[in-house]
Length: 168
Image (cartoon, rainbow, N blue to C red; front, side):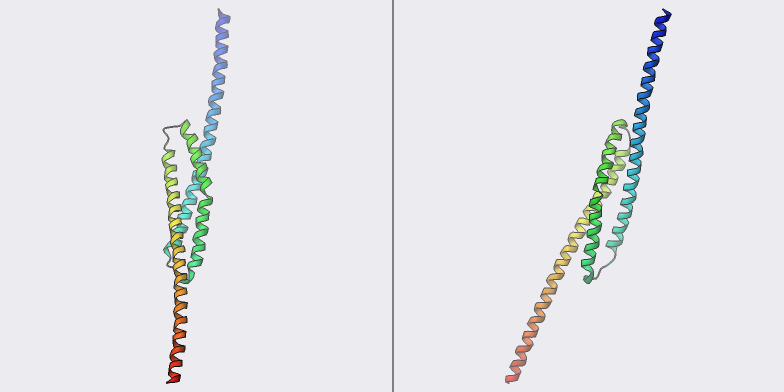
């Protein structure tokens, strides 16, 4: 009987050790994922803040029509930078999904959703801003063509007037 108790205690001890090992591995995995999340979330948050500040400075300055091309290039670079950051946003969302599986009551998804909303707002604003700059550039070109046509017409009219006065 003592041997049976001893055997049961050893089996329970082995089972307890295995459960402890499994729990420790799961906790270490969760800590690694949490650490990755914190690193990426901080990187995304800082990048968004910096990019939003750059955009404010780009969009708040009045521009001269002569500088529309340069402004378009600057905004295009900023827009390309935003597009290049999309994999980081996807990575953050993927890590969040893993974290939510292990901790469903976490508030992490709300924070990530907030970051995603800021990213989408930034992306949408840049798309519209770039579109308006391109449209302005197109109208600027049409204006220049109209001015050139008008100047050409005026030159021809002056020639005709001077010819008319020569014969009078």
